[in-house]
Length: 65
Image (cartoon, rainbow, N blue to C red; front, side):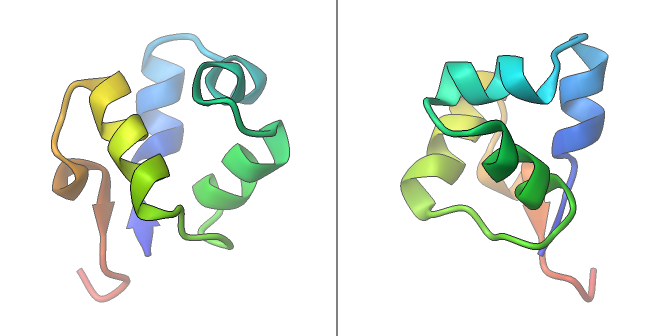
């Protein structure tokens, strides 16, 4: 699944560790999501969407899109 997480995080000058702390996950989890190696659970995706103030669909899209 493609995502805009790295761009949105960088726009806010957050490190992966900063974002991980806010979401109570590891920095490695954020790194894996950003690289498309890990798809977040639905609860984590909702947390991300709430944190960035946008719908999940604005953060994530299928690989084909």
